[in-house]
Length: 212
Image (cartoon, rainbow, N blue to C red):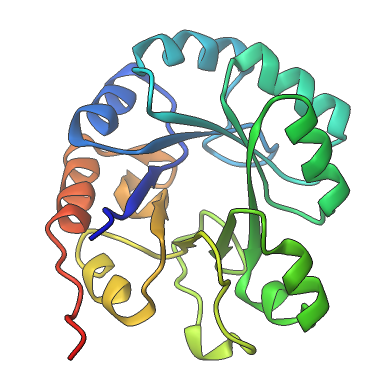
């Protein structure tokens, strides 16, 4: 059984980065998209990444920002991975690969549902994150709204996850992994160390349904 991938996103300080790493996160995310209460600077992230051991993925999250700006910020921050969370194209993803970054491409469940079969095949080689309409708002998307099925490759479930509901949603939807931000916060934008630990424990202690 392959362990589920766990990403803790929207981190801003050494305490929460260390808590996520020590609890066993596979990836930690930093928000560079403007307008979020979780936005950080590249310089701050470069310092925090010093706390992250090799093997833990570091992800910079961007939304509809010029690609040259994305590349420059990601390099300055020293992240390993770029997550695009807007209207970016497959060509943008290829550019990021050429620049030496791993990638994640986030879609709302509605946006992914709107892709036809040909478009889905074109995106199949990319790692996909499926989120609610408003990322970071703590709203769980309506899984019944997804038409045409889930991505066939690696995909992360995000949107409204928390320590209390993540196990049931993993069982229901069988993602490759999960991504959480607001579900481990004591107030909007403020991460809670114990909730981070509880969330990762809930994922790691989950046992999938056995096939008959």
